[in-house]
Image (tube, rainbow, N blue to C red; front, side, top):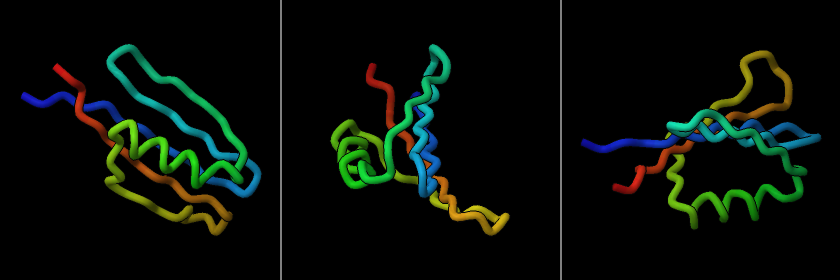
Length: 73
């Protein structure tokens, strides 16, 4: 049976917030928006697969990206 880890990325004009959900809990990291291309490339290199992306329904300039990757073992 496959096990998965999940990540949520919230992109806003002033910051990017990455939340990683693992079996041990959640870890939150923040980075400036200028780092978005490098952050996206790093997620891909670490095996994260984009599974969904949505725009804020409230009209604010915010996007959410959802990723998953298989837990080895």
